[in-house]
Length: 122
Image (cartoon, rainbow, N blue to C red; front, side, top):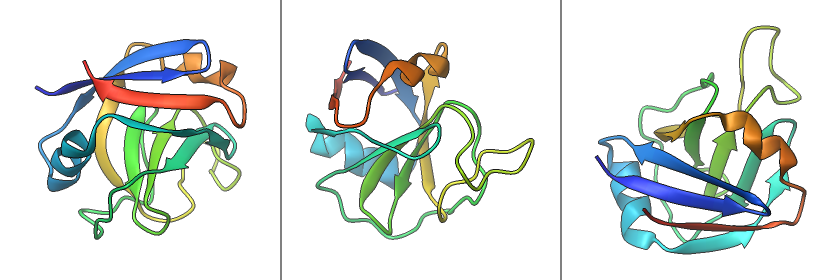
């Protein structure tokens, strides 16, 4: 299982990648850095990976990592977005789920807009 380390502001977390083409492409692009954008309880930032949709999901789970093909973005879902229903987490549009945060994804509530994010192999 491939593991990554995510550092954002004063938050550090690890995640496991799944066995998808998206996960492999992101793994090969590491290390990646960017600035956090927040949309509700989602953090996203552009990455140097350009992929097509792969089993796109309109609803994700707490702690999922997604790749947003529309914006070539790495997404961390730690709660509802502005368009989520009462019992769901809904991205702006379909994402390729490629991994999952190990532990409590709620730590990402401490990340502020513009904080630097570093993604590296664990």
